[in-house]
Amino acid sequence: MTALTTTLEVQILRVFADQRGEHGNELGVVYDAAGLPGDLGIELTAHLGFSETVFVDDEPRAAFRIFTPAVELKLAGHPTVGTAWVLGERAGGNVPAVVRPRLATEVAAWREEDGVVWIRGAVADAPAWEFVQLDAPALIDELSPDAPEQRGRHQFWAWSDESSGLIRARTFCADMGVPEDEATGSAAIRLADRLQRPITVHQGRGSVLHARPAAEAGWAQVGGRVVSDGFRSVTL
Image 1 (spheres, rainbow, N blue to C red):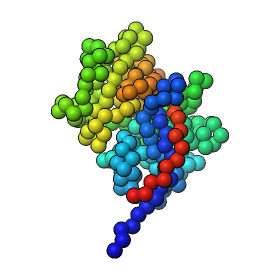
Image 2 (cartoon, helix red, strand yellow; image 1 turned 30 degrees about the vertical axis):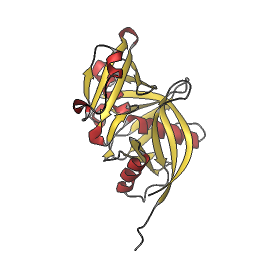
Image 3 (cartoon, rainbow, N blue to C red; image 1 turned 90 degrees about the vertical axis):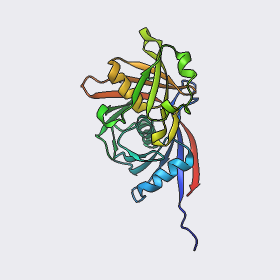
Image 4 (cartoon, one colour; image 1 turned 45 degrees about the vertical axis):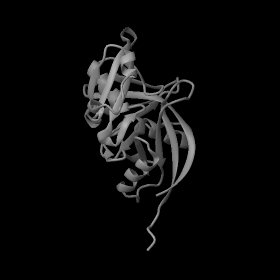
């Protein structure tokens, strides 16, 4: 008996790209996904080798689900920023004022004049991270995702320029099925809330995240640039 297969058309984004449009965390986006089971989203994410993918269930309402290779998440930064950006592009450039992750509180979204797309979310909806501050950016660069102490859910960070709010960071999250994440918006949300100041995080190979606490306690904002690398047909 032949096993059933499913072919999905997946748009590939890079979220938190630098000013040249390079780097960023890859994200798969599937449209018209309301009838697709969550297990398929998890399988797709693992197949692509990404940290997250998104199923857009209701495009007019900007309603979507976020999957890692292991679980569905409440709120994650690069999937939410990426979804806000791409739905805006599909609507002629106007970022939706609100996007709706299935398991989280509604998230405000907007694009600023420099092209950076921002979201504002509840800090409590973001995954919890263990933050480890080191003394210098060079120590961050020396870390290995294979070290036993980095196999949980950690962000290691150091000030590159504290007066300017510049941070060098790397994130390891093996318990989410991702040995190292290229750019982690949820960690930036939690770190900005923790530090209570605006920050610019240079993470991974060269991704750039902007984050800041919101005026209301318990909320924070994260933003970045997004690039589309087109569509890929994936058979599972």
